[in-house]
Image 1 (cartoon, rainbow, N blue to C red):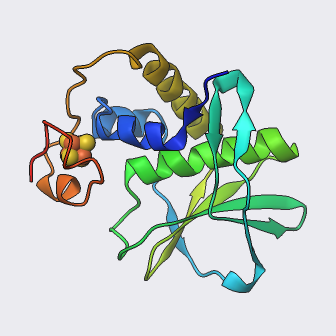
Image 2 (cartoon, rainbow, N blue to C red):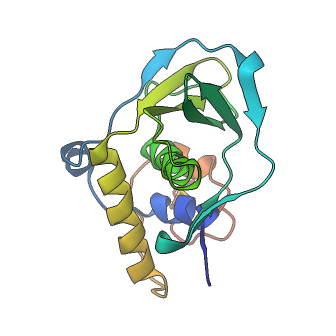
Length: 170
Ligand code: SF4
């Protein structure tokens, strides 16, 4: 079976066409700043799979905490004002994979930037928005011309697909 790798998810997120307003209406949580102790973080060795959605991915760390398992995604660089939507969706995908693999729903996940950590609540709204996105991506999988979703040169400047993307702004 073909799995939809998270790298592909992230790639598609660059082209995600919904406006910020629409995304807010979809219920995306913004993330709240928290302080974490990295001692309890366990490195994840193998990817997690969820066949029903053809999804796979490997969070950087998992934290076991009072019967729950919290995924952590580590991002290089300093934190933005609020986590990018693409980072939130990636973390949501890890929350979903944790729930399906370990049968315990993470109440939130953590995005760890160099200077700040954000907790992002794994709400039903976020889960539904993620599933809608995955279905949309699956539908668009073979399309070649998917329009860019933003007008932010800074985002393109940091993008790993910059060299091959004909829609880059920087
Ligand atoms: S270079 Fe810019 S437009 Fe192209 S994928 Fe990256 S962020 Fe999107």
